[in-house]
Image (tube, rainbow, N blue to C red; front, side, top):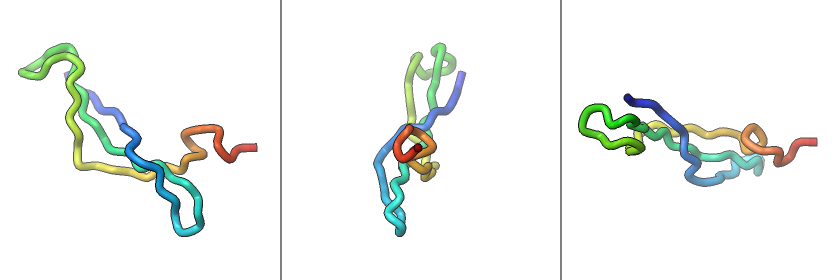
Length: 61
């Protein structure tokens, strides 16, 4: 079975100095279906930037 997860790669500040987390999509193969073993991950070529405050309590009042 194939699933997906996002792995945090780096923290980047935008032009205003606000920190964002660069994340890379990971394909996760579970339960040993096909030739992949359970728990195998494979990076995908999809990335996203997520504001740090959306992932943590950083900057929240």
